[in-house]
Length: 513
Image (cartoon, rainbow, N blue to C red; front, side, top):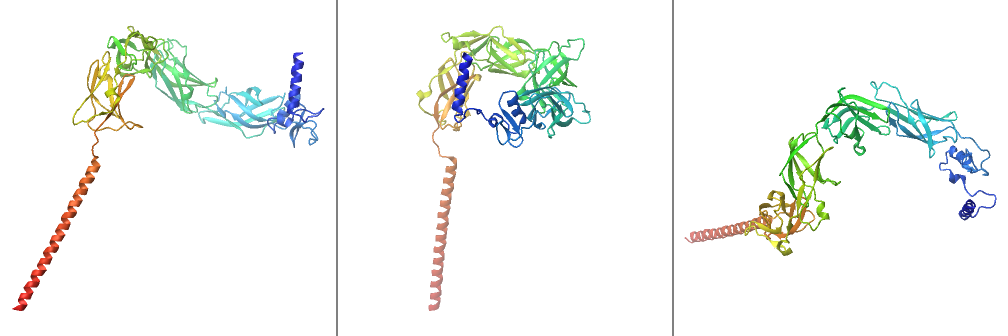
């Protein structure tokens, strides 16, 4: 009964979709059902496997059986290959390829050869052929690759399209870095040629060169987003013994590349103590402490986090092979226990794959809190009158030191002169600094660890720009020079006039005599 209802509903839907269909006509068009107008196989597939009344005509393609334009239904021609993906792979095969085209048959006998060798496990998926390449023998010492045509055979008919597949021999030329600690976790880069080929399915293994030690291969987890055409990147796993390990890389499950490259596993670091012995931090973390030990070498990732937390937001840096400088992580417990002023949390240091929990834990105290500077009113700072500024607050020196603080005025750093539990004194630059990018005013900001606070705004007295002063002085000098020049010229003119008068009088007197 239920099936009958569904059938009638489908019939009604077909009637609404094709209202012009009359009795005895099909409620579909074979031209629309065939996704590729050139694919004869799809048309026959609709007829033989799906129950549609379709036929293939060379001049019209896939049409209804009662189409008047098709005088005689035809069988499919030879298969046509338009694309293969990927276009290359390692010589020992194992690469799964996808071949696109048409006329691949319906329930036909289909075989595929890639560069002259069989492609195994042929299957259909969405009218595409998938198969796995097999071994291609060629002398890789003379040539690193060899190409050949992709040929699909359907019921004895061969494709003749020039679609090529290339077998390439991968080669590893170097490994960097070539050392890591026993617990693993170091990022390794394998450099070479023809590495980004086939399905890019890699397997990297390291095996101890000493036969007396465990020969169980140690894996290296592939990091895909860092693997390029000339580079395979992986992260080493923990080993059983220290010593030298030989490298083997497998491409697409079948092609093994062995070489003389080695990777050395070193002993894990040893953590001995911390400086200071009693670890204390503000809740925001970020201030420094030191870790004392041995073997701080051949390590990439150095972080610290609160125990049982996935966040490792604090980093360390190697000072020497026996000393690290680390930053305290944020206190996650303070977010849960806001009423309790101090909490103690266990923290863990992570050095690549090695980890160590500090036995005593860290005592976290309240963050330093600065009061609004000058009651949130812009403060006028005149370096000719005063040389320092006082910032008031609380918990400023409970566990932090003067060296933990950084005070910025605009884009410039101020000099911290003194620090107490309730006051920080600093000296701004005597010359007005520039504001930070996208800011017009000079904000005072205080940084301590991960904590950032904007305390207030200051302004320097407005002074004449030195360029304006220079221009003014030069202008005055030019004016003075012009005045002097005009005065000299007038004086000379007057002198010349007097001289001429004297000459004329003298001449007249001489004439009278």
